Each structure stands twice: as structure tokens, then as C-alpha cells.
Length: 256
Image 1 (spheres, rainbow, N blue to C red):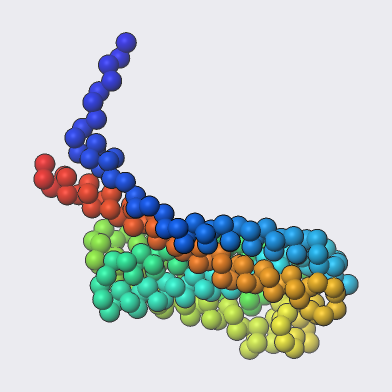
Image 2 (cartoon, rainbow, N blue to C red):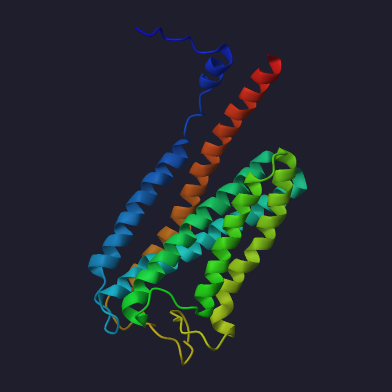
């Protein structure tokens, strides 16, 4: 029978580090967000009528479009965190910036993949090099490179400084993706809110079908506000705990 080796003292002390209790407000916000997502899906899949032009595939817009604005909120948090870190050099702001990029990237991917699912029956293709689709692909790759940049720099202070500058500049790709259909006339991407270009394909009117405006409004609130804020808070909480463990481990290694 193999004897169980005792855990080294340093490993035992690191394992003894406990996370701070989850704030009650975060737990409440998480519950509200889960209920909001559930009701938003119900409003989009059940309450809203079938779109008169696109049919049931139009329902994907209730997640597709709000997810992009949720990504915009998260990437905006990354800009705020980067600016505040450069001003104060406080680690908490770098943590916010990192959380903003990770959450924003996840929501941007949801937006991209739901758009591809919608495009298959509407445009008869999973992908076309439309200006907005191209700009969003560039946006996602830009923020993926942010994570690669952080992983490639060992010095913590230098990593945070470079990442802060990069995260601030990267918001330009988000703004280009948001406004490109207003300035590039060759787009076939629909403009849902406001007058659409003459060559846009796949647009729909908010008042043409029962419940469309309500379902879109509810999901916009949920995915553009509740979801990114909740995920940001959880990510910051987890990263703070991970930094405590890393700091404790480094301290023990130096002391030994």
C-alpha cells in the first residue's frame, strides 16, 4: 500500500488561502440576471409573433444584437480600467480591464456566431465579407491579441502598462464595427433601428409584428446591462482571489 505523502508546508499554506465571501449584492444581481435571461428568451421565443418577412429565424436577433451592445459595455469597462490604471497604478483597475476584455470577447463571439446562424437562411451563406462582418472579425482578433500580449510579458508591471494602452486603443475597432454600416454604402447588413440603406438585406420593422419591440427591449436590457455587469463582477472577484493566491505563493517561495 502506497503511503500518502504529506503536503509540503508552502503548498499547504497556499491551499489554506480562502476567497473573500461572495458579496450579497453580487448574488442578488446574479439571480436577477438569470431570471432576466430566462424571461428574455420567453419573450423572444414565445410572446413575440413570427416576423412577417423572415419568419422564426428573426428571433435570433433578440440575442444577436443585444449581445453586441453587451460586448460594447464590457470593452468600455476595459477602457475605463486601462485609463485608471495608467493614472493610479492600482492593480484593481488592471483587473477590471482584463475582465472587460474577457467578457466582451465572449459576448462578441455570441454576436458573431448567432449572426452566422441567421445569415445561412437569409443570405444563403454562413459568411460573407460584408463590411460589418469583416470589421467585427477584426475586432475579435484584436481583443484576442490583447490576451496573447498579456500572456507574453512576464514582468507584471510592464504587462499591466502595455495591456492598458492596448485596451484603450482597441476600442477603435468596436466603434468602427458599430458605425461602419452608416458610412459604407456597399453593406448588405441590416440597420434595424433607424432608416436602412437601400441595399440592406434582412431588416425588419419593430412595429410590423406583435411583440417584437417589447422582446427586443427586454433582451437589450438583459444582455447589454445585466449580463455584462454580472459577468464583470464575477470575473473581478475570481481574479482578485487568484492574485491573492499567487502573491501568497511568491511570498512563501521567497521566505524558503
